[in-house]
Image (cartoon, rainbow, N blue to C red; front, side, top):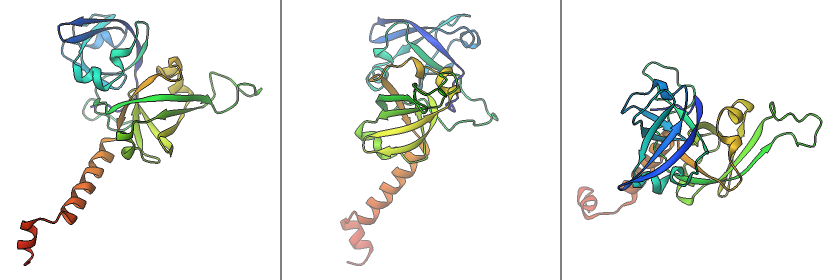
Length: 224
């Protein structure tokens, strides 16, 4: 389990096909030296298994499901990826519960400074930003005003939901510490909805179905 608090970014070195899977190599001095073979880690929101780690690099295999559902398979060498190690038991939950099970990819539609760049008060290193992401239709039911969402593995709070788009306030620390400042408009971004929102939605749907699903067994049990 993760909390969406990114520890550092790494650099994608290569993607190679290996008999049905695609292997990525990531340069990540710092985190790589703390990994052992088989450890889990979050890579831009995707829970992967570390292979052949050394003090500078680690590798991970991407199954077809990962390639289909996330953006990792479409990245080019040199791309920055967000990295997070799993949360240990008893650690503070600084963000929210993030499983590393990406629900799908959205599209980055805007990342604008709150203060216009033409303003004398604008300073790129200290300004806040507004991130906007177009969300696939099948994920929109879980986008909740003031609810949590993981974008590229980053624990964020949804400020507004308008039609097919969510807007999120980004602090300078988040902007610079993660890969957000390296992404171009139109880039795919990994989205994981809040698991608590998904569970609540499933329970509501189950209750609604059991309440209104008229069956022969229900009629017999109720004396009809």
